[in-house]
Length: 133
Length: 274
Image (cartoon, one colour):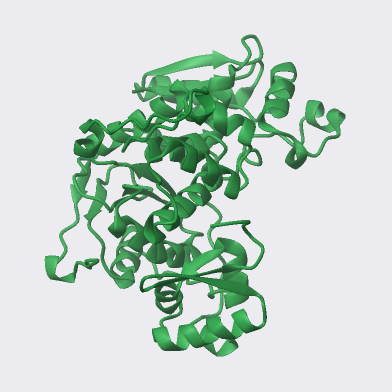
């Protein structure tokens, strides 16, 4: 499984994120949503990783969003998707995700979560374990 | 009820980013996974400023492989109801396509119905009804439930389960900010203090606990609780919890639903039916 990164043209955060992925040898698929619109399946996959649907991924200070003057909360998923296809810049950028997590925007600390890590068992006294009868 | 808040501490400044990631592996129909809920809720209430979390469905493969009976319904396609052990998991993933919060609202409701045996939660019809009970976008849910996206999302969960070598539900895997560190896997269900301790170890500084909300606020956030859950969250005796809950029932704030020896309390008017 690899990372998918949704970028926008002339976005410096997108460039930084791509540079970081390259430097860290993390394989990724880039999709530039300003030239190739998001599919509904991709959009839903993004939503499924967010806490409460839309808040995290909408660029509320973007011109596209301001000009629309809409209440996101009132929109159905289809309506929102249609808008985003038309105005991809109302999404924050970049959006990175793999099967585990989502990262919106570029942050040099948080992007490190995409580095693969191992897991070890935490040793606990089996007697402490709670059981449900 | 304010006396119940006595364990709260003053709130210091809280970190803005969340340094810890939790992967919570559950099987939607496993009673131990349901039992983990009160621990998780309390952990969120007190420490959610430290961690982000998500559920990973690790439905037992053995239960997926068994072929279930197909029930022949009426001839119309809509009424032809199917049941299958993988359906609840796929339904949760379909709900999650509307956001994690929608997914966990759906999951709680599903677990409630399973615990109280108020619905056959292996059935397609019942699983669709649950979506409408928790007010999902039904146009999307109906499409997503049968879609390859929901199936794919479920496969991803099984993939994560394998990758992190989780072979017991419930389990939790903790990751801290330090990418050189391994994730810590806690298999099975332990007392609240154990998880608190691990969180502390991951963060390596004194944990700052958020004060618990009042009982009324609690019901606004999570809607439904068992008596035992309320007792566990506030660390009070079940009899005390029950008395407080009954008081609120008399005030018509919450209502009670009893099945065998489980009492479930929920905010009045929050859901149409159970």
